Length: 421
Picture 1 (cartoon, rainbow, N blue to C red):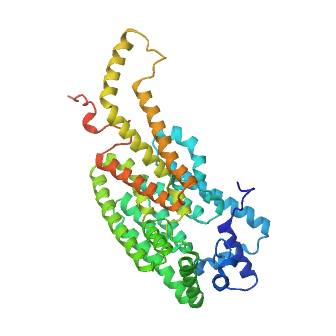
Picture 2: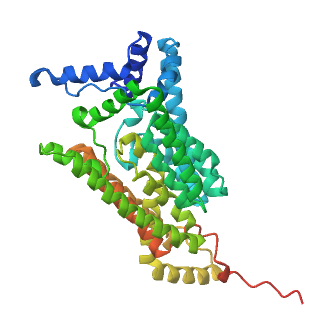
Picture 3: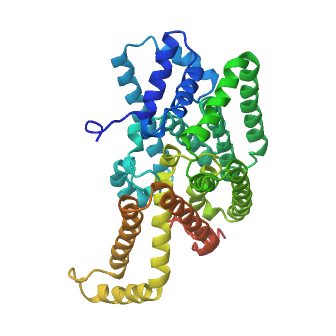
């Protein structure tokens, strides 16, 4: 796909910014000038897509200058390695959310997720967007946080990521949801992130103004609203040639408030029942990503594995509940048969049949949205439905009190220890 297509569309923006800096040109001003020139062209002379400008903060410009010293071929190899490393870190972080039984099949599925961000077909990994590295660092550093309560490296990763993409400060909600007593550290990290933004406005005022204008042009010229609820409203209004700024902002704020209330209530429920914690981790990370104001495909690539786990666990829970009486009866009869004769190898057990049914249902659920995106509607409405449906599945699991680790039994079910007397 990379050989026959035109990969690196996001990486090309970074390369163009490096090219401008090599010649002493402000990458923000140059990109904005290209977009304005595009708008003055006749509609018949415009290309399929308007030009993109460099939209990362001025604090990243010194790093671009350093990369500018590398030869073109070395820079290309370096960036491919960066994106690959970020993707592998994402896979590793998501893999840690799985149970021991789930890892047996998940390890086989992991490579396929490269082309199914958020479970819907897309080749966004070929874009070369820096988000793969940023989310890889964030996901990998979060493991020590939700497993052992050590969130220091997570906060540092989010701060580094916010230098490139300031809205990634919304990821500071994850320690609050998944950790304990993290309100103050998260607020401190958010304050540090805001200080970095203010410092850039003070030290590079002209460049910072051009940076904000370039960000604004993403919506006014490129019309790239993202795939979240607010972005969906903005895209619909733009298609209808209506003002979109106020309405999309209001939709985003309303959805964020509803999401925050839901997540905080669920977090309180999990703290009261620690057995729900394994269920909660992927759901809370998915909910944290939904706080992001402009949710793009490369952002949603980071939640592919958590979403896969949520969907699998939901289907397993539905199948288990629907077949539990039959399963218990089959288990009792099997116990009797095993005491008298060897079990028949030609007839699968009830548990095997349940596993096969889960796989078939999961395959159908996976195929439907992917066939839809290929055959008819654009990518974004289908993905938004899949995203919200998966989050609703996670909420349902938590409200039902589903425990993901079957090998761990509640204390009340453990056999009582013999008295030392």
